[in-house]
Length: 275
Image 1 (spheres, rainbow, N blue to C red):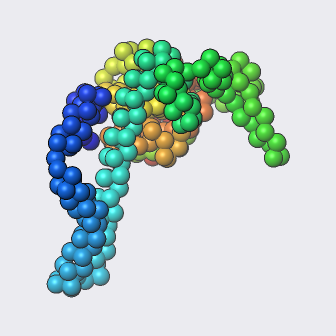
Image 2: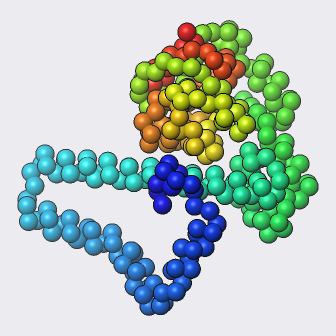
Image 3: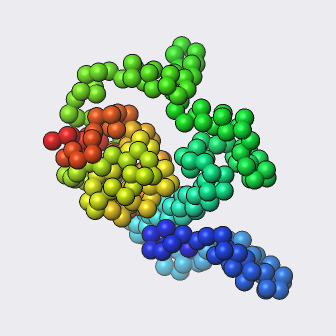
């Protein structure tokens, strides 16, 4: 199942229905036995490790190496699981977007309880839809424990005033380095799903925020640059998993960079130059 987001089409509703049907034909005792075995697996693994440690009496250096390998394996498994979850969420959002006939980007701005409500009603109530649309563009400003929230055009005006003009006018921007590597390539600014078809092999993807939908571009691009995000963002997870040089949290990448610009990205220092 972990391979579906890279090597094949994502599992759809019918696929999961078939999996459940295959499971439900088994006797309850057999299902219970399989479940108990899964629950007991960590305990069994711990006992096996203790037995092996006792048998071979590993040296201090060997124990340190084993711990490092275990940690590496655990991180790899968690990243793979996270990627599968992200891919599954993207598939679910595509399904809901079609059913509710709204832009899928708006679904990512909904609260869990709002999604549950809309699912039960088979539609998004007009009042709720209006509230969600307001979130499409939002700026939150905090100063001296006071909070101001700006929506839509007011949010854009606020951000334009707050970002220094000299910073926007520069040929070099910086952000959070995610995955090391020096890449030189053509920038491709992606603002919406309609721009996906414009991305060519080897392009450097430049976007506001790397949502789960962007995963399908991972095999094409040579690097990622985003306005938003940090070390735990979708962009960061994909970059580490696919070994793609990445810089996140630049704040102004899509304002400074244009599609077709030649970029030089330093993934170690988190610097992107327009050359």
